[in-house]
Length: 235
Ligand code: ADP
Image (tube, rainbow, N blue to C red; front, side, top):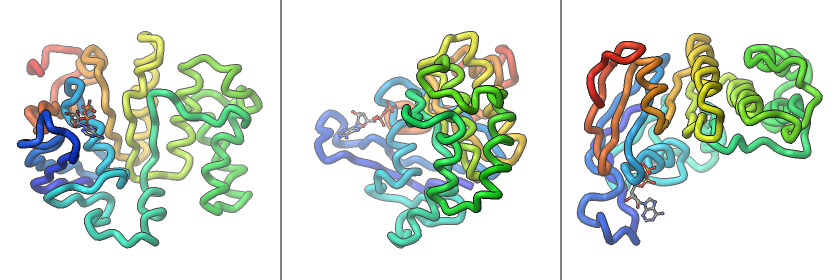
């Protein structure tokens, strides 16, 4: 569960919008199991919102609760445990080039001290979810952009995160393949992870529908459900 209460974020050197902040009076609640698209023009505050959730930024005012943690007073020694409740997916994939597909996924499990038995079962399972079992021994450079992003999705889901944050996951991908990426995220959502996906791609949002949150100049200006495949409210 994600809950923001009256959250303000100001950057000290942001003279342009000093009076209102990068986020201004944001209230929102996302329950476990939801899939939410976050849209908004450049500068709207989307990255700032994600930085709050990943603890890269603290709010200037207000409170943020995520997965049972109150982020305002989370103890430093609990930060790694908190971060492990989240799987991240980035626009630029961020795979380790010197590792095979298998090891890219296994690595995140090794660093969290999962047993080798668990790793031997979990890695093939998540690679099969993203339909890349036969690429386990390939290196990222041998894969297409879409395939690399599917590896990144498998890696994000390997740790059984409560929340998956996808930051413009289709930004570097062939438009037709973008639909596969969102479909995979929906599969993971059905398997139990809450998914938050930031995107600029309004066609994708219209196609899949669901809960859409629009940020504009640091505030939530739209938060509602739209039906799949267009026909929804204008956002
Ligand atoms: P988005 O991700 O929607 O493009 P951001 O969260 O990056 O928006 O930015 C929101 C606002 O905060 C913008 O006005 C931006 O210029 C400002 N901002 C973002 N990061 C910084 C920073 N490190 N220092 C100063 N201002 C920043």
